[in-house]
Image (cartoon, rainbow, N blue to C red; front, side, top):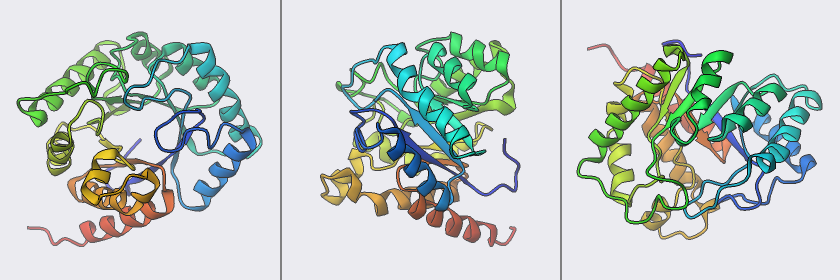
Length: 276
């Protein structure tokens, strides 16, 4: 999916949910969702990430059939009505939902549980030769922010992701189909998120493409004295630029235009470094 010379990729978020933390309810109407996809295409998006279940802190699980009823019509319409050939990821922890999404035209699995919630999702990815993003998190979305604690967040997240990779490889997933996500905001305190952002190179060193999903996250609002997530566009773009410099390859964002610019400028600067 990547080569050593590839520019960073921008993954645009399309939550067809009523309750996601930043954009819940905005794109439940199919026509509005299609308009958002067209907007993201115009702004330079590389991947559309579609989710039918909110994983915000404190959220409850959504039945598989309800997730399918939300995401499959959107995926089908994007492929057929927009004739969109962009890569499309399904944001789910369920192998049943993932299969329905792949059958409808999704091409990547984005699993915030890292394959732990439903190990069959790893088998599905292996059998269909589908790239999969494995994210670190603590517990479930319902409980993950109930007093999370780490002795050494970098070492513990790295170790947990290594275990996710081992399980994926054991299930038959090809190494080149694995991507990793440190799970910013998923069972992390503010200081944990900041430490992970300061040491993204430790994750890149694992040898797999890294996805960063810091978009509009609450911990940045506490730093900027901002309560409204939509006001954290600039803060998010800063994390994107820093991520590019650290070697992150993929950025999951709500605001494509601003983060496309941040990624492209940071990448150009990084490419201009003189070899030592």
